[in-house]
Length: 143
Length: 167
Image (cartoon, rainbow over all chains, first blue to last red; front, side, top):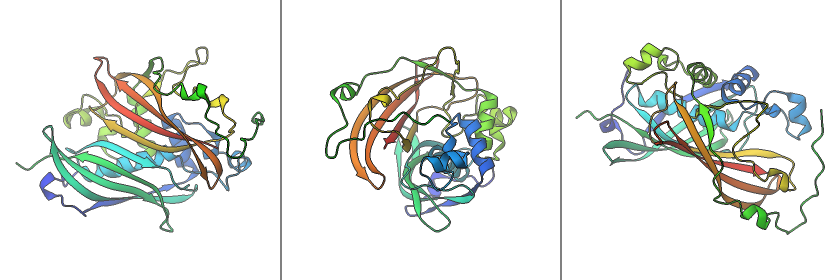
């Protein structure tokens, strides 16, 4: 990936490049296969509705992984995602976009690593934050 | 489709957390093996929509400084599935509670080293917290489970805290 991000380029309040992923039913089946989570509320509409849900819902762990992908793509080839923590506060329904966002809350050097702390979240196309969290990325230094 | 077995509704105001459940806090599970394979890394990366070639092309991963295809964020290998030897981490007392349904409440994964295809991880898990809350969906039991992943050298490479919501 081009455009390596460096520790020196980072300042508090900086936005992480937004990632938008459409989550159709095929995406949720890919995720079931990739993650090993075969719970039917994510791909069987009848099953989901029998448990009281309006429809199939996006896996929480897929949203966690999408936040990880957003950070990986932002941090570039030499960056490393060190931690991603998030809470599944709201449901995201199938056939909609999951929009991943982040904003830098601080930077620090620790044990020889240049770490950037980020507030992360996913939101629905209507702007409802469904998955708030925090993350840490390590970046290379120019020096 | 089998209906979930009817269980008694929790009595209003009464705690569903029993002494037996509390006694589980801090008890380390038996170790479970997780394999990190190339194909599994690719499938996981595909599911998340990655296009970065390091997740698909081993040579590209090596030239970017990885030992092999790296595990994308959130992928900690698959447990070795064997229907003849059922075993899983967590869920120890699930049948002891009056709740019928479960939701994933949150995930926190911290990495201490890079995990790559070819790695075999040993994970142990323990319940670290139990709490109750009244939510929009009614009374909920919230469990926090911590799983520690070690590589073949015994080094801790990742720690996951998972929040479960039973309701």
